[in-house]
Amino acid sequence: MITINGKDAVLGRLAQFAAKEALKGEEISIVNCEEIMITGSRKDILEKFWESRQRTGSSQMGPQISRLPERIVKRAIRGMLPEVRKGGRGKEAFQRIKCYVGIPKNFENSKMIEMPEQKHKFIKVKELAKR
Image 1: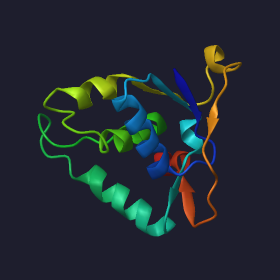
Image 2 (image 1 turned 135 degrees about the vertical axis):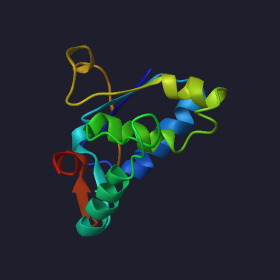
Image 3 (image 1 turned 45 degrees about the vertical axis):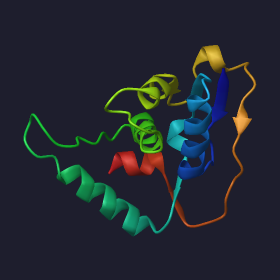
Image 4 (image 1 turned 180 degrees about the vertical axis):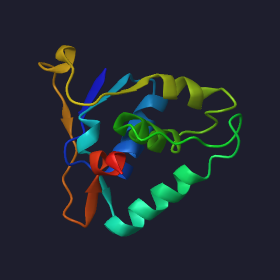
């Protein structure tokens, strides 16, 4: 089992690492999902997220994008996995990934992987979830 601390990690790099390890058969737990950074212009990120939330279609169809930080992270990981909707190895790998806000009690004493911090323009997932 791999535990990843999301504090000050870049979303794309973290998602790529988690997807690769899950495809290998590892159980992945990501803690502090609200502290993950999305790099880029704050204005562009907020605009793109708002537009994608507005495109929902009818009540039966359409991508319904959540504002919860752990679901935003999980959706980014899902985009890096093959054939999640059809079934197969991507769907099995996606079920091995768990995302948490904060650090649950059962992960407090476990060894965590720290992702390298980047110095760019960014917005945190918790700020994106509030809007």
